[in-house]
Structure formats: C-alpha cells, structure tokens
Image: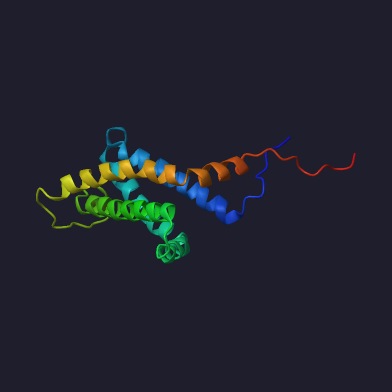
Length: 163
C-alpha cells in the first residue's frame, strides 16, 4: 500500500518541511570546515532570507503568543523567550556574517568598509549561541514536530477501486 499523508493541512506540511530545510541548512552552514568559505557565505545569506520568510509565515503566532504573555502561562512564555533569543542571535549572526563577507558580497560587487576585531568574534559568538538555542527550540516544539512527522508518514490505504 502506498504511503499517504494522513490529514496534514498543506500549511502545516509547508511549515514542517521549511523548518526542516532551515535546520539542515543551518547545520551545514555551521560546519565551516566542511563547506568552506564560499558555500558558508552563500548558505548564510540564503538562511537570512529563509529566516525572514519564516518569521513572515509565523507572524500570526508571534502576535497571538505575545498577547497570551499577558496571561500567566509558563510554557508559552518560555517558548516565546527562546524564540526571541533565537531571532536576536540568528539575526546578529547573519548580519555580522554579511559584514565580514570575503566572497559572496564582493562577488556581487558590494564592498563594505567594515574592519576591526569586533565583527569576526561577534559572528562566532552568535553562531555558537544559536547552536545552543536551536536544540532547545526543537525540544520545546517537539510534540508538534513529532505529531506532524507521524501524520506525514502514517500508512493509510488509498480508496479501493472496484475489481
């Protein structure tokens, strides 16, 4: 019998697979020794764009959760704080990475007059903090991730044709 998604709305499938691609992309981009500077920089720029799209796709959640913070509910506050920290550090990581670009921006004809000992350590620090926050983010959303994944791979027979 073929495998068919068991009642997973299209938007949920999009969120699930887009989030998975961001996670894999970040993991590959963080593996600087594996990717080298060229792939690292282009992948970092692509991740910056993906993060903007991710935030746009989930803006309704941001607004709902922020409003809910006015009510005393622990898990919502923790998830919101972790997501806010992740947004802050990933944004700094992407921006500092763009500022110290040695390949991608010059390839586009863009040269930024950014020098000094500040940006490289900031990029490294924000990447490492992000590396610590991503598993926390995944763990806090694990029930949603596992539930969607389970429904995506659930076996459900296709309607039987008369023989």
